[in-house]
Image (cartoon, rainbow, N blue to C red; front, side, top):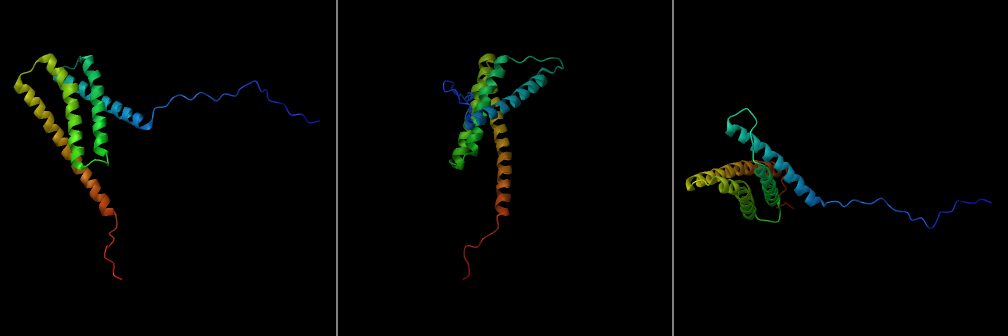
Length: 165
């Protein structure tokens, strides 16, 4: 007779263990934060090298590097708010400015202020310079976005709403 091998009923078949995965929005948030953190660290290193006016190794406090990570998170969240379709244009701009400038104040400027104790005029000049820089960058971003939106609208063929019958 033709006997087929029987499977042992006592052995359980186990599937490979799945590792827990991070959901896509959190992964996207984390990747954006890490990318911004890398750029911010490079900016910090370059500005500290320029400020020290030395071609030798420059020293940057480790705390500054650690504080750039939550600032990068603030920038990533601000970028997400700006790309949101659920908010009005005014709310997007207001929340983006609050997240960006608030993140700068909390994680970049406040630790500096606590350590060096600058005068009131220095505080005003630094914060004014940051606000002007933010406004200039956002003006360029708004112009590029408006141009891209206009090209997108121009590429759609015109369809008359009043048809002759």
